[in-house]
Image 1 (cartoon, one colour):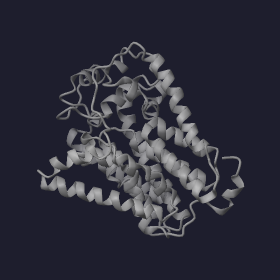
Image 2: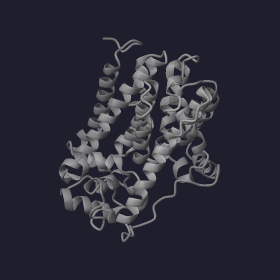
Image 3: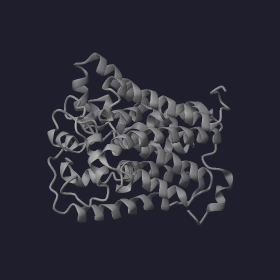
Length: 365
């Protein structure tokens, strides 16, 4: 069956899974199918590496400091923070890392999986999230009059692919956002706030996606769907209180990198380092072109997937030099833009943001 405009959404989801599995195998095979490579343990992060070795035995270690997967592995071993002195103590910033609870909660089997299972379930969770994200994006594209193959922009999103490589939570967070959009399009207004809360509890900055959709709903319907933003904020606040009670006596092992800076400072500081590397300059200027062009296209549209991504343009202005310097980190931080941008040039501009009978939901949002 052709992956054309009218391909079934489920087939796009299967294709998205196949793409994701293929990319995962490309990483796994050179390491003897050892899933510990996705824990992103680093040679310069001995605390987390020794922790993983204690629980798993031999592990694969990357050059440098590694990345997010090593922290999510520790969280998944104790997602409720019942033994923070054993697990949360290896996090660089326990309170900060602990906010991202949904991915390790699922990957950890809600606290029941042993470490040897968790190291695989982290990868499987991300692969399934990619497939579901592709399925949901395909359904959304079809509902707005676009081709279902646009769903493949989820597993082909460079930022989400980097999340897969480092065992990050961004894939699950974005898929929750797409699920919330699908709920709104299908008038499941009770479900959308819950899914936005799931996105925020996977990656706290995803509350910005809910804000963008909130603004579009107001522009489109002249209604204020407060639950879309209040529910994730309340969920984050409740978990924050619980987390601080559980981590009261856990100091952590370091401060970590800062992700934010005053407006445009990070960009200008990073530009000086780009100028010394022509390839780096070309890649980052290409990304910058997409980000700058994105805003006027969004403002002329009524696509919720694009309006959800729009606040990430504002976020880009306050990212630190640590994020701006590397495409790896920049694309992860702004991942919603790179799926939404092709929607804007492919889906008919007159597409309805939400179905006309969504007016019937007035007073229940």
